[in-house]
Length: 484
Image (cartoon, helix red, strand yellow):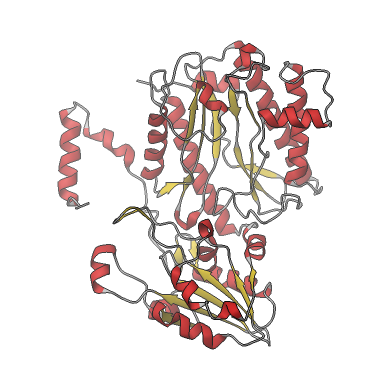
């Protein structure tokens, strides 16, 4: 894990390029016109001002009962082996309200009986040895001056300060821990409190704030979807039989990293042939073959945790077979009709929820399955038998919210009417196992999903991922167009 000097790295990469006979200019494709990690004045996350985080905290406090405190735990560092860390990713609720992208911190929002409030931030103590290895830490002075905390302390004071804030009638609010586990420091500090107070979960309140994106957040999500879209186009243009599924994932990730996306929004799903019928196929150990489809579902995450989530399915050799074209046409038609219904509802200010849109898609896709013989024509739509058969080949929901997480704001009901500022996915699919003998033989082992990210606006919708080809004509012209 020792680092090469910048000069040494340049010499190595430049020399390697020349030794392969590649012109040095080929390396420029990995440059970006600006550094996406640079903070401008008063920003805590690139593109988002400290004042916006302050406004978010004010909105959160309004949702709390009087005489209450909300405790937010930052994410902990995680390790792949005894001393090798995973890339740190901040808890989204914590980052949304604080803008602090450091592990182990604790934020407290205190709402007094008179509705006034305080924001207290607990951060790691300064440690010269640790900072020599891992980089500088935010100190208590910066927590107040830059992150706008009313008070700030080191973590070793958390237990005593927390106890001093709590009276017998104080309402205690929490957010759910990642993977069901709270940090040991928090458990120790609240051990005695848990004997006398009950904790209320605040996730649903925060989800109701996060589901509506601010103008600054929309800019961030547009950036994430633009990076993801361009990476998809690059992968598709260079796709050819004989490539590994893993190679497509690596190509996508490299393109996103080169544009400043620190990580994927989730592990790449790349399923060639029958692997595409596995909804979240992650192992990526097969090779792309002629006359097969490949399903790829991926996205990137940029600063602030803002993500994209895109799926495309295409013929590996650039030409659909007859059965592939029939099923692809069905899924694409369902998606386009759902997008149109969504647009019309938003344009006409008609109430529409994700659940209602999903129900509409089930009718369309189910009828299509009957038309091609996947579901028997004798089975009526809206019957228990239809629901059973349909879920065998599509057990997923059409849509989810998108934002600082892929499956964003999960406690905000999908039965709620959609509103401007929300970002959602629209992703119909069909997944036919290769060993299902009840499926017509020509369709067995085919998996198809088409997914776009959609911003709800005051006048309709904006498809943020529309640059990624998806019509049959566009795919057959585009796939492999830049393959060596």
